[in-house]
Structure formats: structure tokens, C-alpha cells
Length: 316
Image (spheres, rainbow, N blue to C red):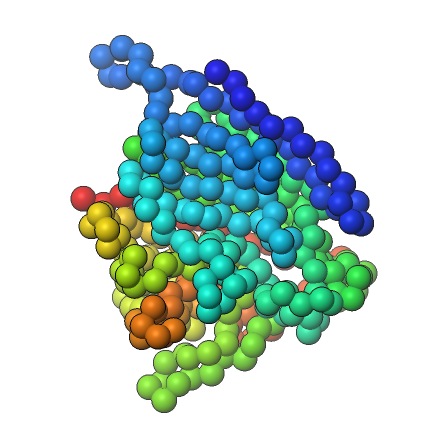
């Protein structure tokens, strides 16, 4: 069976276009040679252009091409085999947190993290292409505008691969090019708390917001063995997150890797892990933040490339 969505829209400023094509109904072959129906299927939402991968009746992940802030995002990312969410979307404490998403904090002083009127992230074009083996490739071009002037253009390529058992990987590449003049990427300066751990600031880049404590427990550990809040601000080539769903008790292992060719590799990490925050709901946000300790300058016409890999695997 073949089903799909093709959309070409032009929004304000002529920026918003995307196309989605979906192939469904492929087959896998057992070792004995008997064909069995592949339980993986990709569905599209005609209104938003969102694509969702299922294995049987269990949701694996959903990708939304454009939110109201202009930023594409993944939500929900689910625990394989259960459909239970591993991300939270627009929590009451930070309504601009979008599951798994990429956002700079400051470009030339313009705030792209929180919604503002003078800093705009805009989708220029986007294409979502599935392959018969259920890999989905997302190609997007985004513009970052300050007071209406384009500061940076991003070319983004994301490949999502879903295994027959529901485990999945996300390979992320973003190439940023300074437009018209030099730019500086920065964040709110990081500050330590009374306990000596990094307590505020330092966030920018690819971020994963986890659900509250009543839905999920999670523990962070970097490659050097530093855990939870102690991993914040520390440089490491990876961050591992072990999660347990409160409802089902199902467990998963999430690994986010910083590629060796990235600037400032191994990257510093933002790692907020606070069980008592927000009146006991907790606060769990983690991601690579290459500007955690100092800004990064990009000369006019120069490019910055970052690559990350994410693995989500169900555990016994």
C-alpha cells in the first residue's frame, strides 16, 4: 500500500515549503524464508505534515516539520514497544521546550531560545523522504533572522532509522553559514550554585526535555562516569540516559554522541537533573552545548558543522 502527502506552501516572506512521501507495506523475511508482514508503518498528518512511525499499535516517534516558533521538532519520542513518551512538549515551566529540538540561545545578542518578536527562526524549505527499509531522511533549510535581517542559514539533514522491534536511531547534521557579516553564537553565562554544580545558564543547541518524575525516572552518565547534575558543564564524547517508565516499568537506554569532527569536541553538556524543581514535578533537560563556557564566532561566509547521533534502545 502506498499513501502520502505532498505539500508546497508559501508563507509570509515566501519561506515555508515542504514535501512528504510515504511508502508503506514492505515485507521482511524470516530466517526460514517465510515472508511476514513488516509491523512498521509510517503515517502522516495532512494538516501539519507531521510523520509518525509505529510498530504494530505502538508509536515510536513523531516528527513535526514546523512549530509555531518556526522550529521543527520531535515529539513524542517513545519508549520502544510501549508508546510511552520519553519527551515532554511545552511544559508549564518552559513553554518553548519542544521535546527534542535544536535552538540557539543567542546569535549576535538576539534571543532565539525563548519566543521574541525580533528573533525569528523560519523554515525556508523542507523535504521528508522515506525509503523502503523504513529509514526516513529529513532535509531542511532554516533561516535565523534578527530584526528581519538574515544572520545565519542552516542546512539540516536528519536520518531516522527504526528497527523492526521499535528501537531507533537519529543521525543529525546541521551546517550553519553566516550571512552578510560575522556572527557570534552565545548563551546565558553559566553560573554555579552553592553546592558547586552548574546551576543556571549554559544551554544552547540540540536539547532533549524528559517528562516529569511521576511519568518517568531518568539517570544521566557521561563517558567519564559523572552522573546527573555533576555531568553539567563537563566535556564528554557522549551522554547516556537510563530511563524507566512509571506506568509499565519498561526500561530504555538513550545514548547521545558528539562526533569527533565537531568544534570543541568533546563538547560540554548541558544537564539539568533536578528532582525537586517545579513543585516536585522535576526538571530534566540534557544536550550538547558547545557554547556552554564561551561564545563561538563565525566569520562572514564561513560555515559551522555539527553532527550528533542518538540511539534509543529498549532494555530487558
